[in-house]
Every structure is written in structure tokens, then in C-alpha cells.
Image (cartoon, rainbow, N blue to C red):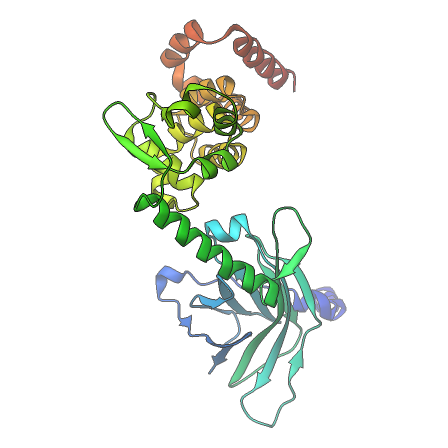
Length: 351
């Protein structure tokens, strides 16, 4: 009797919060096709049993890929999330949207959420409806707006005429600059490597690097000879550096030459490239590269990369896997860096 009384007293909210284990997509889970048009995305559900879970195929709204997750327990949960990508990480959208549950026939009324506004990063957004749905229905997401924050300014809609024109103009400029570099159009300065000469444009180099700007403003040998000697980079790395300065570098080339680019960014004071390299080098620290990256971080004053390496070694205990390498590293490392590592380890031990 007591058990029955407790069950009667269970609130409706408590019962509706009961969830079911999600299906494993690798075990035959059904992926739903999403139809899109303009700012609308719709998925049709023919049937959805209690304790079931469906995931949609990716669908494109704006420049991002999205997914829907539909989960039915005692309540119906509609989840929206953005697919992980470099674009989603660097420019996560601020999405303004509503979610609707539409009947396939006219016998049921539709349900519409409030207007949500959310910065969409890697986490899911969920709208839960405490209702039982049977038979066929449609889940619809309507995006009222998608905004991005560019260069630390105010959020701007990707669908505004201003942004569209800016994007179109930027693509045109990047295409022109890339052609100027690749086809050596009206070059007025040469980059001299050990066994190769590459044509470039002093105005572009000077606008992207204060160091290059000083070379051409003062009566230095680079200005007088219209040439810059670079002996500490391979031809491929140097071409990747120029491609970055001209706005045409590929992700593959950046990844391949990011260490050389990081060193060049420090030498020529290219701060945005230095930040991009530091961010990239933080992403894949491992026992194979952590000591070299710690040394580079110290040498080139990359504070975030240095903290990341120390955290990996000390907080995660990887220093014990590198006993022999650490002995050799400590013999050659800067004394101030060794002191900082010791202090970091001492603080960890005290904590």
C-alpha cells in the first residue's frame, strides 16, 4: 500500500522527466532525412515509439551544418546542435529560432515553442514537450536569424545585405590577391631563398607585417635592392607564409607548416598568424611533441601554449611517461623555465 501511495504522489513533472536509454547509431539506428528551404528545416516522423531515439542527417542552414535529435520518453524532446567544424569553432552563430511540431493531418493542433536565442557552440539545445504524440507528425525549425561576431564587433546577421556584400567583396579580393601572387603580376620585390626566388609585392608585405614595413620605409638593403633574404625557411614553408599574407593559404598547408609559420610570425611580427599557430598547436599536444612545444612556447612567448604543455605534463601526469626525455630536456632548458616548471609542480603537490 505504501508503494502504491508513493506512486500516486509522484508529480507529473517527475514522471515526464523519465528518460530512456538512447539507441546506438552503430546498431542500426535510423537517420532522418531533413528537407530545407530558405530558413526552414523539416523532418517527417512516420512513427515514434516510446523509449525511441532518432537522429537526422546533417542539413545546411547558412554556412554551418546542423543536426536534429528526436527523443521520446514520457515527454518528447527535440534537440538541435551544430556539427563540429573549424568554422563552428571559430565563428559560432547566434541563432534565433522557433521549433514547431506540426500534425500530418488536420485532426491535431500544432505546438510552437517560444522564440529562442542561443550562441550555438558544441552543446545541444533541447526543447521538451510534455505531451504524448502518436502517428505521423512533422518537426520544423525556423531560423529567424543567424548572427556572427566579426573582429570583436557587434553581432551581425549573415543574411543582411551588408554582410553578403562584404563576403562577396572579400572573396573577390582574396581571389585577386591569390592570382597576383601565383602569376607574379606586377611584382616589385623578390624573396630570395637558398636556391629559389619568389616574386611578391612590397605594399602587401608591408601592410601585413610591421617588420617588412620598416624594411621598405627606411634606407635598408631590402629597400635598395628590392629583395628580402630568407634563409631559415624551406621553399614550401615560405610559400605558405606568403599565401597566408595574401589570404589564400589552405588548411592543409597551414597544418603542415604551422611550426615554421609560428617562428616566422614571431620574426616578422605577424600577430594574427602567431595566434592562429598557437591555437592550432594547443589542439594536439602529445607525449611525442610536448617538450618541443614547451620549448617553443617559452622561446616565442606563447603563454597559452606554455600553460597547456605544463598542464599536460603535470596535471595529467604525463611527465612520468617521459622520464628519460625529461632528463635530457632539463639539461638544455632555460633556467627560468625549469624554475617555473618546479613552481607549477609544487603548487600541484600542495593542492
